[in-house]
Image (cartoon, rainbow, N blue to C red; front, side, top):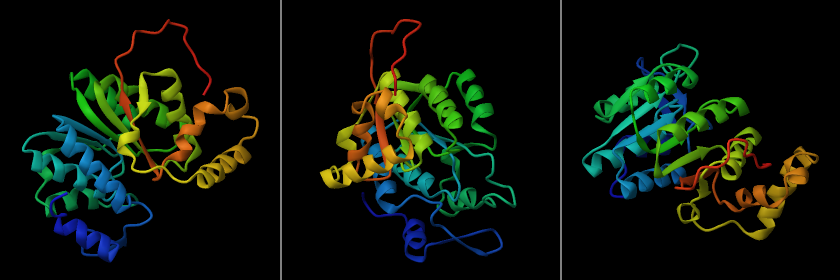
Length: 252
């Protein structure tokens, strides 16, 4: 990364963001850590996508990393979906304000709507994306819906980034994708794996949470790969595979 945006430096040093009235709001634990933001930035810089997608904006920290990379690339637009951006009990427009403060508002097409309403519209417009960051509702059905429609938008070779792997519904949706859809973990984009003891600790925690779930009936191997990841996100790359039969299903 070249120089981090001054606004991002300020946010990470102060751990605060500000609404239109100047009132300070704690940026954590809502926003992504700097390491994850740098990973998003590097992914966009390297892939040079024409269009990126983000589900869940909040205070706009991840959005700033993505848009900085797009601006440095010299092309690209960013589609953002967030139903609570301007609501008083939501994010108080802070994400949009931060884009304006950084001079990046023109890079973003913003949809203030639920993803189940906005994604079909974006798809109907014929939009194609090459990278997507999924960080909206963490209910299993919602993550699965975001996955389904984002897959329809994503070009072969493109990447999806899932945030908050420590949430069981997110991991389960990701495991579904890896077993039932044309995706693989992009190991080269995750940094060094965590140690084997840490992998075992994470696996034990997941197993204790649901001892009679997919780890017994779906096999240990499909879920194990998620436990080696160093950070709280996963990057999957879309593959070009032959179509599967209409009744295909693999336990996850």
